[in-house]
Image (cartoon, rainbow, N blue to C red; front, side, top):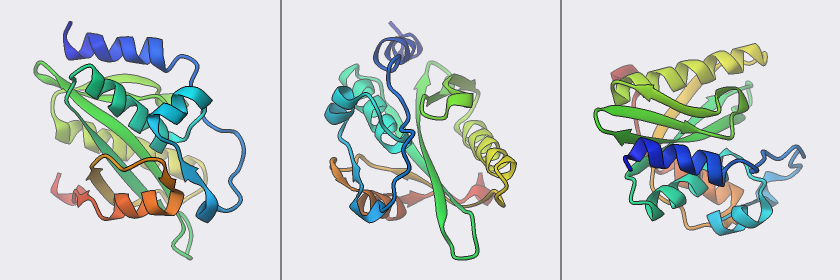
Length: 170
């Protein structure tokens, strides 16, 4: 089975009943980012947790993958929205594995990593603008596996201390 077929099986079999939380977190300084094992039990997790579950399952299936985090500033105080997602390669194509962002849920094919990253950045920026925000992305990074569970702010720091990818250089 090639990487794409295995990824499709993971999406179908392991993510079919995973939900995005509907409750609003009042105090992110007290929030915990679940480990993949905790998410398997709870069946509810944010993009950070769903991306790490996907990476965990990809690694179990020997599918090389990378995780990315995008940060958007949404007000003058510098508050941010973030999104994480997984990328893998199968044969000569790159794929964006997405589950938590419902309108984009699925596996999307690209001819290059650059094309993939630019498309995700553009789609997320447009979605932010449709929500009434500026849609300005201030950071795209590839990050390593965090030691979960961990605090929300600790995980955010993990992203900020990761390998930044200059969007203008793509």
